Length: 211
Figure 1 (cartoon, rainbow, N blue to C red):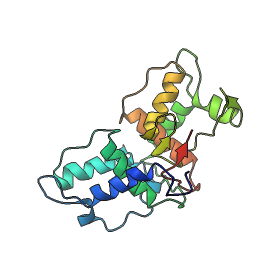
Figure 2 (tube, rainbow, N blue to C red):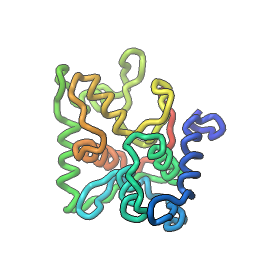
Figure 3 (cartoon, rainbow, N blue to C red):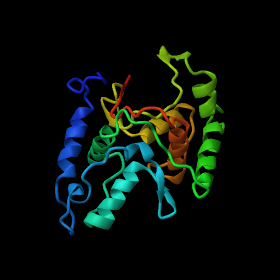
């Protein structure tokens, strides 16, 4: 399903994103296409620093909306924002993840790494225990992956829809009976940054399909 755009259900969101990309909006009456001609390689570089703040791709889209288009920010995890992210991500499919490293970004990377290794929740488990120590084994009949975020936003058969990496991270936190962070929280963005850094060099698969 993932490898054939004709059967990949996530392509419905990509098509919506393409339409939104060319639609004028906001007080500035501008479309994304008015400023950006192509976005190849962009999704492979996020999260990234913006004005000394770490932001993921969804947040960067919203910054463009509020600052350039003078339009309201889209709700995180909304169909419109996922569609734009999928459309942008699709343009980088097959390209290697290329997360920048710098002294300025090092505290964010260290924080994300610490979160990946931190035990939490009533089950007292860390991400690394499952996705490193037990990777390749099975949980409830499903293979345990290495937690490489190469395909987000992804279409999950379980969700019957498209979802962001943060939605998947929230699922994991709920699974270990921990209180999940809010969408867009610095803790989630730092963890995203570490996961993308950890997967650097791997090819982007957006929009991927998973069980």
